[in-house]
Length: 220
Image (cartoon, rainbow, N blue to C red; front, side):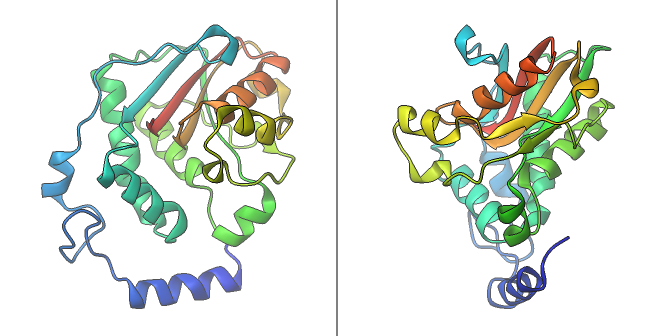
């Protein structure tokens, strides 16, 4: 649950920064229909190197597009949890265009936050995305499959992939092995830049018996 401090911060954010479109500043919502139409949604998935542990990566949009990076920043750091629906719908559209096929062994998991960061933010941005994606595709969601056991520095503060890999090493553990054993885990996050976070989560899931890991992210 959001802390009292977080609720107060969100209250003042809502007063000082009401819902204006991140793109054109039109009042009403964080992403207006006109700006939504300008977002380019990719049509094909990516296939990361085998060493990452991620079999296929569905990345809906380009993180370097200013509107996308601004939306995600507003979502994560501006307490705009309601943006999860717009962002998840981009991912759903991409999966459809990229001809994602649901299978019986699929489950969905979200990249977890450390409890301290979750307490500060009040929500896990990946969790909200994962719930909407799971509901759309009718795929079982396993929110307790992964845990973040190390409170690492934010990956966004590091630009070098080697530093990111070292920072995130050993940060995750699979705490519900029965949920992932012999399953293909669709791992949901908001952003993947170097792929370090997804790779570390994939390692933990495979150590626990997952058959394979697919990445679902809003932007890369």
